[in-house]
Image (cartoon, rainbow, N blue to C red):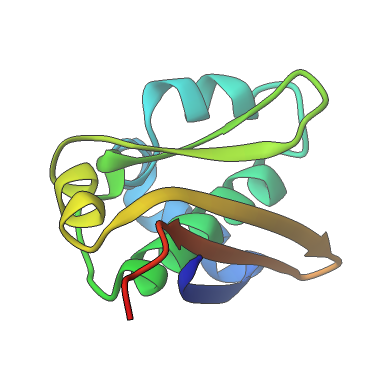
Length: 125
């Protein structure tokens, strides 16, 4: 059962300016070490912008802000993204009956967009 949906879009240039201003300090606050490593050898900024949008979409699907590091956006071997919730964000999801979050990412020229769908068990009526 779909519990909630979250969507986010970010102008890639906005993330570029923030990273230029705050550097690795901001990068390490938002992205996990595995996400940073995975961004190497790709169109790095576009990749990170997609992950940023995904995390924002997850926050929205859970109806709360939270800890950036507690949401990890990873990819299967076929590059299909998936979400791993940890620590406080996992607790919030459990409290809301969310068992899984589906994620879809897209990039187009200047923008990255993500949609998160929070899935839970059927509620008794």
